[in-house]
Length: 252
Image 1 (tube, rainbow, N blue to C red):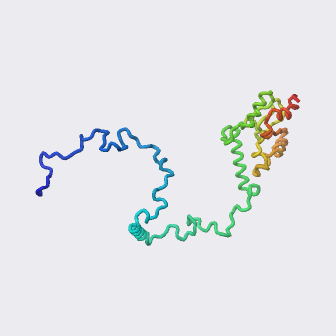
Image 2 (cartoon, rainbow, N blue to C red; image 1 turned 45 degrees about the vertical axis):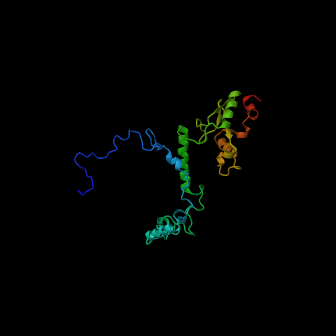
Image 3 (cartoon, helix red, strand yellow; image 1 turned 60 degrees about the horizontal axis):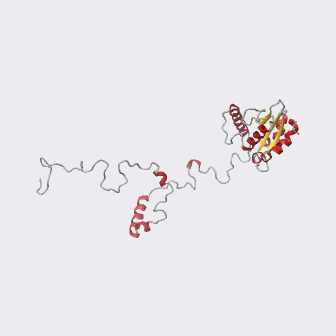
């Protein structure tokens, strides 16, 4: 063994930190990872939205002109000879679909509407039948809560004045493929619809189907032998309802 170098001689004890610190203690009292400390579980949420300190800074600003020049030369050498993944794609993200939507190509569905395309007509019938079946079975989930606020006001007025109309707009009663909001309970073929202007007025909603309009709903129910009385949502008040229904129930 070279002179002046202490080796592991017989009886020599290797230096160890074992026993120097107690469990849970640290050399620095300011350390945050003390006994019982837990890392914040949502630390990643805290980082979301934070801008990098490098954002908007140039290499020259961060490293100085000499260091920036070295880094740029190094990056240039590394990328030399490499082919860009999108070279020759002309703005397309996939070679598989390149040229599919070139200028002058006519889309397959141009000019087709649901009234003319048999594929759309058959699909719409299939979906419509499936939705109505789920609605009748009570398994249909709707974004609009039933009954709506105007329907609830109508229910309260019916209960207050003992009007012979029952709420069935949640799928309890159907007239062919129409689920009215209220029906007369004494055997007369009279139903009541509470219409919202946006959902049933073609003046506000051009996409509304004819069967869902004031004229269309009354005409459709008339085909099945039912009289339909329509109240717009701004007409749901005691005075208007009693004036229009009073003669039919003997209050007028």
